[in-house]
Image (cartoon, one colour):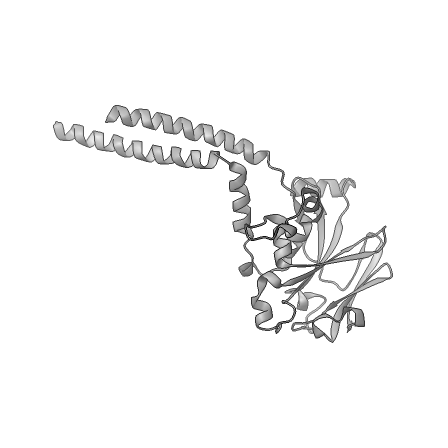
Length: 267
């Protein structure tokens, strides 16, 4: 038994080392689109790329009167304005945007960098330009905003805007559901085919998924499971091979222990 255990242990260790080597190669070769956010902007007046940004509470405009809201946060940039309806508790006593941070955030963003250090270095050198994103989260339309509208997570609405310092329009807005934004990262087996993005669409719009993360309460978001699924898919055969090798090591060690106990008993 001791000889068999030694052979099994040697084979398992070699298998674990080999699968680990190939696993590292597969993970390092994955194409990962990275998005970096700085701390949210809390001020209602600031400068982005030499242009003023103002955010004020105002009666909602007729063309933005979603959810039956009466008031809105009006964002103005380069003489272009967009109203974000206020449908939840608006704490005006808190300074700046602190009172609405649960559902509305202004987010400095960088895309195209391979690490946080790379992003900081290339921003300083001017090789990368920052982007300014506004993310707002809304309950499902057609349901009470304080009960069923909050429960139906897959139907939550997200308004995602970007400020453009040089091109027109100065503010672009996309409106998508939680389910649509979740599919940009890792579609599930239940995702409708028409909702699954092409590689080009995913590369262009994946920032929207990460912006959604910034404004979604952590208890309602399953990003860790999604990231784990993505990593496991990338590992391919190396993941089960490593598992089998690990099991072989435990079995062989148990066999060696039993063999030693048997030898002592014979003595």
